[in-house]
Image (cartoon, rainbow over all chains, first blue to last red):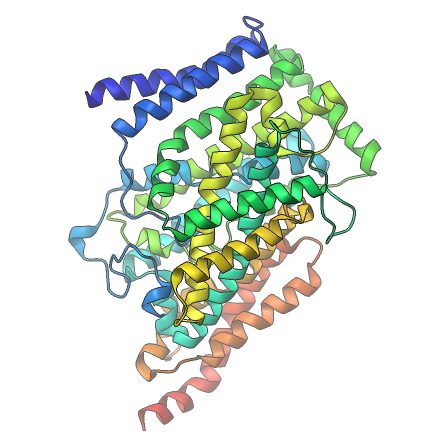
Length: 66
Length: 463
């Protein structure tokens, strides 16, 4: 199940930035690229919590991220 | 430092990290991968273009500056962290005394509030897009944007502060989950921006007119701008000066099993402070080309390239970074007022951050503020460096406060504040320039003052 979720996350990640390259190559419109990325984003946030836990020893309590 | 001002993780905050808790390099690469994909990247990237940086200077300057930052983490922070295996605050307390560390922490907390304020502003620009709420930067430093935007900042600030007051574990989890996706969105923003500018061939990319035209437009709008190679190198090297020169990341690398973990910040630097900054700058270049508009509104920029995905990215990037920053500032304030609850102090920090976020010039001047942050906190790292490498060689006592019980080590106080004040006076236009000189001066002054004052001070205490 975890491996499946990881695979879906990977596909979703590619789906997030992949359309931008297709748009760059004039393959799809900007609007289409944005909608595909949004769909991939939703998939990412559903699939990823299934396998990604919290990292040990969080660092952002002491260091603000810039 | 007081327990309540320490990290809430409760892990070896006042003791050496034991061998069985050490972590391999892979963990550090994972941590840093998402560490520098913050809401402020959407603001900093466009500021380079707005400041007139050429594309060549930006590409090379960021490369060199980020490389220097990685080397500083690797060779300055990691060896001390692995030898001592203490948090920054505990290490500092052993040298400077608990009272001085509380003061340092308070300064840290106030600076955190202003950083969080910039992050709230960035988030609000994105939340405002669907509601067509405009964001403009007024001429006056203490000027407000449109009243609707100020109200939106208050709403966003209140929500972020309440979540921070409730604890931050959930936000940390969201931040971890979102990190790879945010990097992907940042990269996509840059690619889409190139497409919007018609830069879809290697020749047009090399020609670089998309960038030079944008610079020309900025110059026409705002007058001649200058942000050259050296300034870019210094900024990208030292914008995290508090973490490497200032040794804040001792708290991280104390867990390192091998010194090669010290290379891990490279992934944060080259994804967050290279890919993300350049991508965010390209967003502004595309906006200038398509709409003849040079205003750096992160929400609008992300919306124009990625639609709702861009909006969600800006909100999450701002939220997940503002939240722990406010939480940490609350802990710092609580260190000064231990009778107050953490929740009330977090809300106070959130209120300060929200008020700061209402002034758009704070985020618009982020390049300067980040340098200020490094200049104020960075030099304290020199005290740790000198204490670790030089005190015994000069026949002096290291970690003086831990041996004398001093609440304030005056040598550290003077060595820290004097160069910071002088540095900020001379480099007030671009404070990042002051980080290295102030760091060096702090180390030398600390050593000299210790040489002059320590034997007497130490013998008196012993007596």
